[in-house]
Length: 130
Image (cartoon, rainbow, N blue to C red):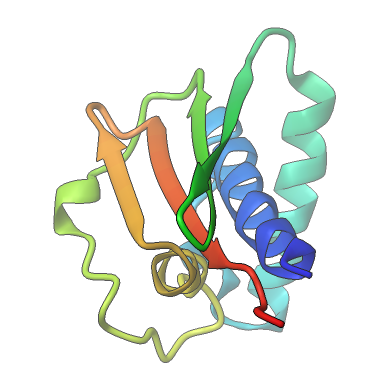
């Protein structure tokens, strides 16, 4: 029932950890069609050259009174990013940068740890009643 939302959250966080954390790609490249092409060309090249990196995912499912809680912690081996300047309440008018806003909207908690290469999110759900 909630698998689509959970898949969206996990895909977004994993993609960010891989592309920005591990591979060091800058989303601002995706400002137009040519930028998208260049971004994904760099992504492919950097994946080919990658020798040592990690993305760790820890998942916990906890029961709650009328549903449950999925707690995900994702940490990559990258240098991190300046999460202090994030404002997930602002919608980005660009072709990039909307993923973290989406995650913040779907989760009841999103917390970054210094230096910005680790995130903890909590997705809560309620079971449908009879």
